[in-house]
Amino acid sequence: MLACPVLGQHGLLFGLQDGHLHAALRHAGLDGLRHGVEQLAAIKESGGLVGLNFATCILRPDGQKGADTPIELMLRHLDHLIAKLGVEHVGLGSDFDGAHVPEAIGDVVGLPVLVAAMRQHGYDETTISRICHANWIDVLERSWRP
Image 1 (cartoon, helix red, strand yellow):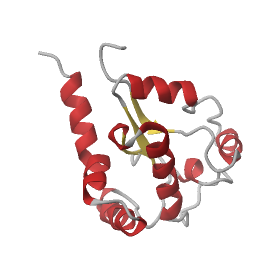
Image 2 (cartoon, rainbow, N blue to C red):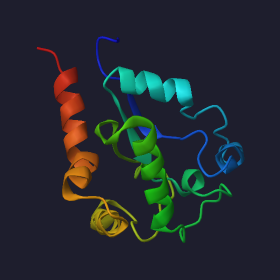
Image 3 (cartoon, rainbow, N blue to C red):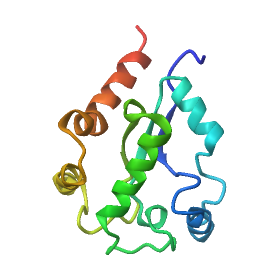
Image 4 (cartoon, helix red, strand yellow):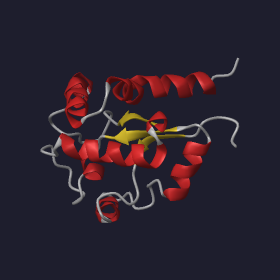
């Protein structure tokens, strides 16, 4: 066990969307930057967290930077992260400082749109709270040392 939690701030998931993610990563020039099974296991074992990447080129199976990317793809990525790690190891990674994000979100002001979509998708309030902020607070509190 590592001494502190490992973070994957902007999760680039390996194996999502029936193998299409590899092509999307290659198209985006990010071929080597994905969390494989071993990396996800290490993050989970460390008590760490992977943040959902909002970059449309990562969310989309075709790897395009499309503003019209549906929020449903974000929810599929969240479902995948939760299935692989458990909800206590999942957060929001956004990448608002340079990535093309779905136009329905746009920037931080659009986060309530994602939260509403999470509710409609069936996530309960505890799960939403954990993903949106509580998991980050937990990891940060366990990481800070006096």
